[in-house]
Amino acid sequence: MTQTMNLQINRVTESRLASTDFNNLPFGRVFSDHMLAVDYKDGQWQNARIIPFGNIEVTPALTCLHYAQACFEGMKANQDVHTGDVLLFRPRENAKRLNASAIRLGMPSFPEDLFINYLKELIQLDKNWIPDMEDSALYIRPVLFGSDDFIGVRPSETYRLYIIIGPTGPYYGKPVRVKIEEKYVRAFRGGTGDVKAAGNYAATLHPALLAKKEGFDQILWTDGLSHEYVEEIGTMNVFFIVDGKVWTPALSGSILPGITRDSIMQLFKDRGFEVEERKISVQEIINAHQAGKLEDAFGVGTAATVTHIAELGYRGQIFTLPALETRTASFTIKEELIGIKTGRIADRHGWIDRVS
Image (tube, rainbow, N blue to C red; front, side):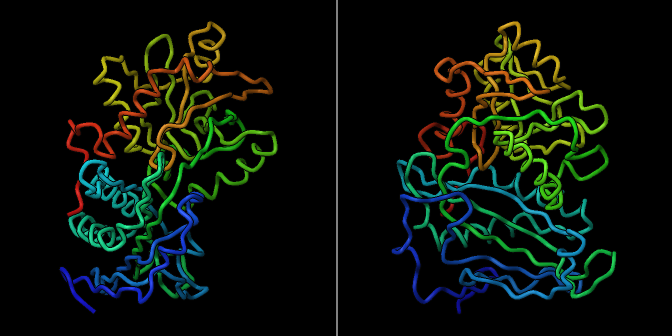
């Protein structure tokens, strides 16, 4: 056992790297040799350790299993194509958002500097797991949850933070078909829609299954009160390009403040596009499509990067988006984002944090 910044490191005796098929990396199924674990007890974070990746033993009375006191984050690491350095994209924003989620769910926040430092130690240890294929990356999943052995509706008194990492290919391999949802609701203002609470995603699974039976890949959620305004896709924030202008729903308290979303808006502005961040009605989108002005629609997120929408389904009708070869603006922005993440394009905004 060695110790770095009060972080205990217990290395694996034999790596699984050589037996991993890097030509077959389905999202979220392949994990590296190690993971980070930190406990919260008696009012403080303690016992930080990097240990071999593996199963954990928990009590069936675990707080998060009964009352969903759990939140998570999604991040990626790439290698600099020129230097081989490991590059993290805006990790402090993820640390801040994890803490915002924790506070909303009655959980303790985690010191941001420690989060970044511990994450870098973990990635440095498993940096050889970073894939070098196109559209691939090392995916990073922090998860924080209540760990009391107690059944009772109150905040847990103990918590655990894990960070697991693993190589992955693209989340979506092709443009997606998206259904505009009018029956089920993902979130209301005042709820937890603007944080990455685990329960948010559980509530979307049944409607998503119904949409898949209709041939759709994802749902475009609308506001919970009137179903008049678009909000976000199940795994992504959403953008539209209408008559040369970039539209995205304004953060309303029920939309996740995506880090990729914020970055995409900035990159469009850098290129002189007019970006409208506001309430966008479903009818506006339909009208723009019927007038031939809906030039593009796509989702953005850490896992999805930039994923184009092929078709929108609404009230039994299918609205087909323009051919991919015409969507030069979004493809250019996607390439720029990937270029920044991999060191091919200069980072003008200070988004990259190098792991040394």
